[in-house]
Image (cartoon, rainbow, N blue to C red; front, side, top):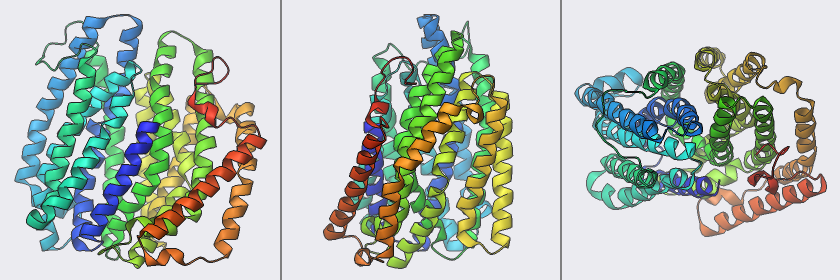
Length: 503
């Protein structure tokens, strides 16, 4: 969690630099749109599909103490990943402008720029995907530091590259920096995984490894991830047809939204997945229920106050961090508007995503894939309906949130033999206590909003950053005091304290 916190904060700084250098106009829209393509495919070739199929397999092999089999499987996965990416990079180069034209509503100049950016961005995807394999193996060994600190390398390289190379390369500085950052991230995680005896070697024959079952699981998960990628691409296509700056507002709002979500959900789910997979391999059904219930309670404890604080400080946060250079106050307000839409559904979305991890840990990849497919179909359909109904850019977060709630309910029913959250009275009681404990910070937020503050309108400067930090710290202290009175063990969520705790 500490590593993810540092990484997310540096990611916000990276977004701040990009906003200051490229603004929120047509060039920024093209950069954000094109970079979103490999970022979406990361779900397919990176941390999404790969880790969901890989971690349960490596965890099971660890319980069986099959060291040589694990090492050979690692070499196989790296080899096939490299083979897979050769045609992908070639295609992204040959049909670069055609792909951008197909996926967007940009004009000819924007399409030409997107075509220049796409091939190096896909090369960046290769390095990030390899880093995901390395990180997944580390997580199966319950080693998390290198996997979650390595994104710092990417952010640092991108920040340095954009600041130093933009005067000479323009928008291409982002492409060069992304490739360098992705390579650095892969190198750091590979050095960490080597300490466990793994080596990148060319391997084709599967031998006695569970390669086929891993690939079958990866294929099933990938089908769901493809649906997510398509839904995200459709989201950005809808955004590109809205007024100028909508794509950048969508991309920037995601950065702010992913800061608390990424810190808390990724930390909890990354620890839970190998534990759940090991418990399933050992037939420990009570342990599965205990860990899942504890994880959902932990997510509620952390994400509900995060939602309240960031929702009421959305305009202040975006303005104090991004509003500088070519990034105007109107752009900041649009970004904050989209951000608030996503924040409304942050906690239920995390519940849905955690239930998916539960299904993956039990190797129910087919069922999980069907749910993900239906969720994304509903997401696209709702976006279209809302946009046609005149809801505008808020159509995007509303459709995503509503479809996620429906998918969570479906998983709660389908996975009830493993864990039934809708029938867990202890979970409902814990969540009710969490909501009551957050009433003080919610009341304080309403009082602050009624004061109609305008200090943030001057944009990004030291005074406003300090003011934002002071408000955030005050809200955090109020939350901690309320949690202490209500005896909600927020800090205890970070520890494994034995049976009954869930972690």
